[in-house]
Length: 205
Picture 1 (cartoon, one colour):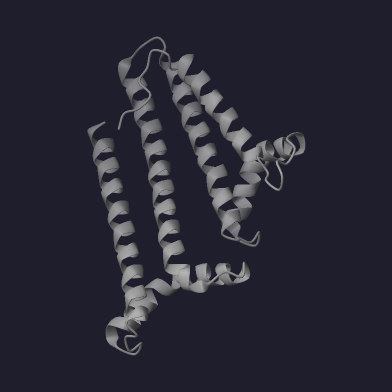
Picture 2 (cartoon, one colour):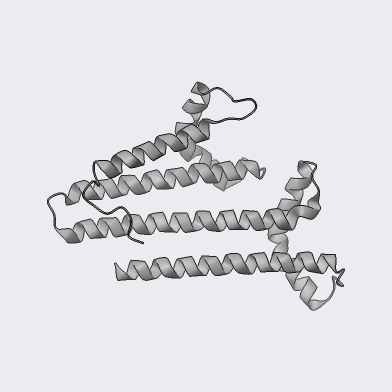
């Protein structure tokens, strides 16, 4: 368990450091543009080279929606924060599930098999919730179905979202089926916690 705690701490700090570094580079590029720094200097070239993979798609997305591409650094910073949060949640869910299974096995209780099933189900429901959330983000930023990640997310989440989309009417122009899906998954997680994991801890980190 101590090893998992160390891994969780390392992952949290590493991802946080990457987020801060990425946002600082984007801010630095925005400052260079504002101060009209010579783009051929060593610093400007390297900052542009590092930030282009993030800013170029965001700028293209804004132009597709007929929005001012000058706000691309701000939007990119928000997307980096969201992506970092999702990665932390994913890592936390996986590590928490592994910790729960190890805790149940180490307890040598008669309820260990039930607890293992409970931890696996609880973790899978959490991962499924994250998959739906990531799919929503992909759609909001204009992700194409040609993207293999988006195709995989659609295949994973459509068995739940598809039927809900057919049953739940639009609210104005908005599809609220993902919200209903989140509620269903939350209720399922609560049911697992109150039944299979009633006598077991849910969080380890």
